Image (cartoon, rainbow, N blue to C red; front, side, top):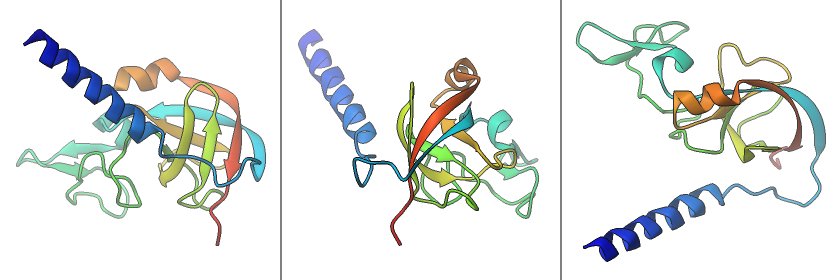
Length: 148
């Protein structure tokens, strides 16, 4: 039984590593490199501005969808947030923009945020603790824009 558990844990680690390894830049040279404010977020209500209605269902607390059902963990472009999901100002960094953040790795812009404007990106973490541990940092970020 113990050997079977070790094999399953090993398989789980391979799957996690494979999912993180899917975001790669389209070329070896970034389109630009900029110093940005980099913060962390998770899918909790504190980070993402949702609450539960009187039926216990998650709903948006502000914006054009205020009061409407919220799929917890779903990004602005419709994907489910995972390690490598970035929130950015899509006027500057459209969905699909790939970035390399030292200490975090590669990520892809798939989300927006009410407080994410200009040269500021938000990194997705699986836990609120992980997002808080990252904190707020000024980091040089390499950027690869999506090809049109």
